Length: 119
Image 1: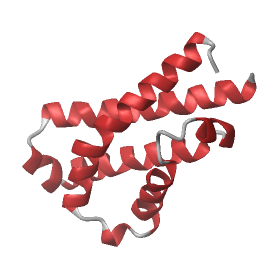
Image 2: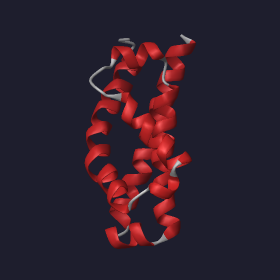
Image 3: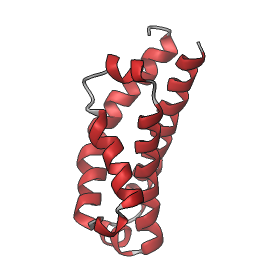
Image 4: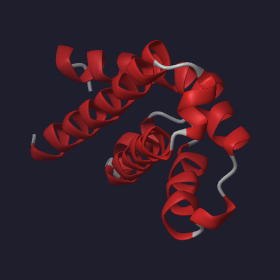
């Protein structure tokens, strides 16, 4: 049960970070998001949180949900934290506009599954 709660909590962290990103996209134009350092690094931080939470999901959970390739999500977090000098605005924008919406659908489904007790 404890591991189930851990996975549920991590999924909630991911959904919360996605919500912050979506709010930023709805509030600010692309130019401001990418050129205002505070906003830009706020987006970076949310992607770091997503990658860290994905990394903290149990191995059993990730092995059960192979429809998501978890490795690049965790790898992105590692690049953002350890190799930050190589972050490009284009990479960040592609992540938040193309990858995150697709990923969100899976996370919402996984979260609903855990909430229903079907795990």
